[in-house]
Image 1: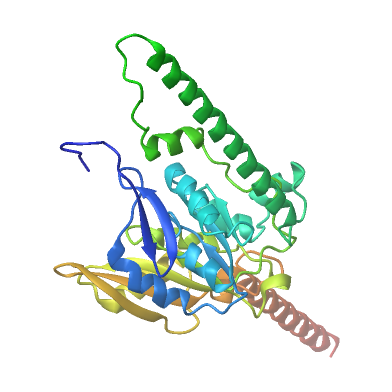
Image 2: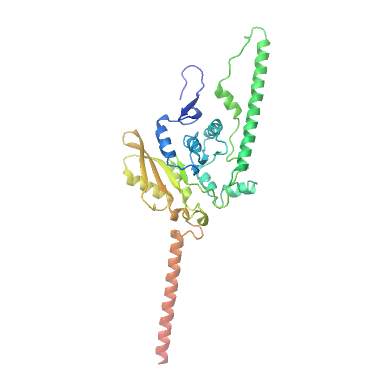
Length: 341
């Protein structure tokens, strides 16, 4: 996006269904044409559901889900998106209900699931502990907000002092133009956002979320491998989440889309997915939302007691070996009897 003339301030505030979204069009993505889709998907969530928003952007799903009463773990890899996500959480008064993260999507999924060897163990070692209730995260967020407000006040005082000094000089105007809101916001949000809320760590066995949203149509399917072997069988059996994965279809048909999903998961789906046509993007190019429950064979792959294909094959091999040993013993015993005769 290029500014041809005027103030190079591309920060704006959009209101959808009473929810405010602040953003800078030059730094983050926003599409008002998806408003109906945001509403449709959020209405599938029950109040008090726990949502994992893997590619949250500035919060088009996370904020309305939080307003609906859901607890939302919202993540985006883009630091600018993560900053505006935190801002939109604050201005919609959702602190503590929507928690912002800034990390890779795969790492985020495995963090929430507390997958062994992932970031969950590092957070606990760093002193995060089991923050199932999120109280520690709330306190840290409040402290951060207070620090940001103090920094903003100090910066405003410094700007006023500089303006006063300039105004006292001969030949200078007695008032200075107000700085753009985008510049003030950028100054207040100096530095990269933290990867996760300070002091937060997932409970043992992971955060039991009911839905995972993956809103990155160009590449979200490629991140589905993060669910393979990510879940603890004792914690998640019978309660695996629904995944809502956005993707593009280019003349391949729904069968081709399902094949791509299963290939990325590394196993077949347990039931046919629900496929919703979001909108026409271009000729022969559709944006779809593919909704399915994570298959047990995928979720527990490689985990003890998971019942995945690997463990089943091992059991079959063991049974075959035992049967072969019994047959050899019977044959040897029959030969011995013939010799004795």
